[in-house]
Amino acid sequence: MTIAERQAREAYNRENPWRPMKDVKADGTICELLFNDMVGDFGTEGLHYFLDTDGCWYRIDPPSRVWLTPINWRPAFVRLTPERRSLLKRRIAEQNRA
Image 1 (tube, rainbow, N blue to C red):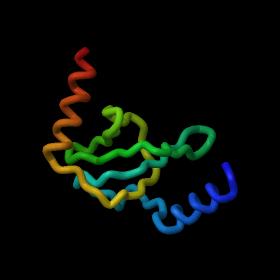
Image 2: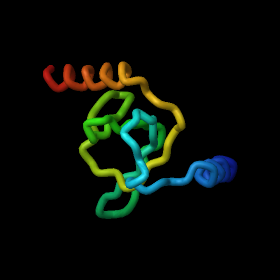
Image 3: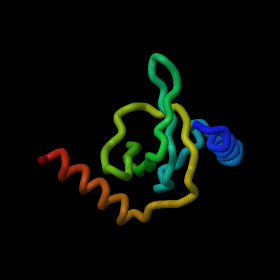
Image 4: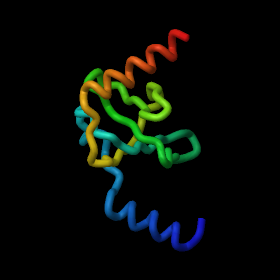
């Protein structure tokens, strides 16, 4: 990572800090998630997720359900419509059947 890339990432982190999980709402907001494993925190650069009203997290591309428990989140300030959320969940169900 170059110095410019690191500075850009630090600026992004300052403008859009990680938030605690108690603040998340199941309204279809597209988010980034931060997970924890036994070694430490690991981010998921470039992957976007949403929390559905059923209480489950879903990854948008490629569509899948998230089985790990995230420790922090940050919003992308864009919401998926209920129709788009149901379409993604339907694609996940089709993948699981195949």
